[in-house]
Length: 305
Ligand SMILES: [Mg+2]
Image 1 (cartoon, helix red, strand yellow):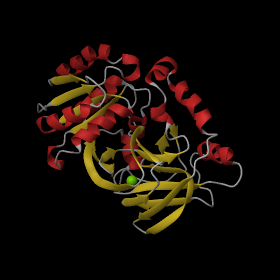
Image 2 (tube, rainbow, N blue to C red; image 1 turned 90 degrees about the vertical axis):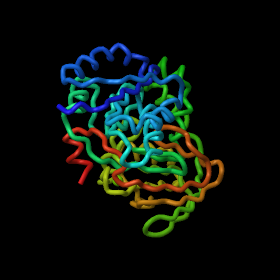
Image 3 (cartoon, rainbow, N blue to C red; image 1 turned 90 degrees about the horizontal axis):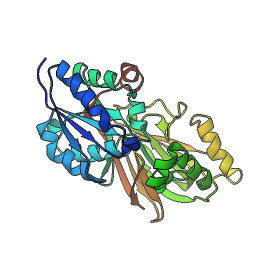
Image 4 (cartoon, protein in one colour; image 1 turned 180 degrees about the vertical axis):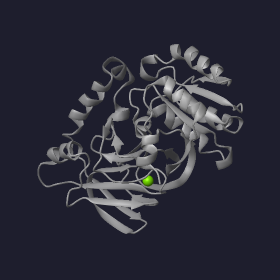
């Protein structure tokens, strides 16, 4: 086996801090395959953005242990480096929310994931950009989209996923009216919406929305659903959207585009991959096949051309 340069980046706080005790096991698998592994522990929230950027050119593969937030930091560092200097990324899902890993078919079976990283070939995945921020699987605004970062760390630690659920129940009764003006590859739409949801892999908030779209993760396109505020039964509409796995209502708009230019009032808050990024106007574009990532064979068939 050709020796490659591997760096493990991990968040010691993710998923109740259980990851640290797995490191010895990971190192053992690496040495069994004649490979070595460097390790970096995140020091504070946001630390991995600069570390990933600075170390990108020195490594072939980054193993990223944590949840969606940890991966989000690493992507935002790696994407600032030139394409040919970006390392491949292998996710080890250890967070409270692991939607990115689930989309790529990466389970919590540590041994399987490590061995896949050592012997299989990664595949090029699209990475999206909204203003100065990069994201992999979702961009959203409106009802239910603030809870991923509004819920306090202490509550998440104490209640886990239930903390998000409780916040969701509260938020669903709030009145959201997003006045948006959107330009995309095929035209222009302008209306009032309750929820804007762009997904690259039919999954958000731990749920698979299989009726959302047939989008691929390497087609250079991001799909966006604009859910109109109904006159009646607003709460029912939101619930039905999720219960029906993302089915489209007649009045709603579904877009497929490589870019979006959105004019929005300052009180519209945008969330990408579960992190709050900007308010008001945003420019979104897809970087087609921007980073090599490790993906399960089943997901390669489902989500890639
Ligand atoms: Mg796509």
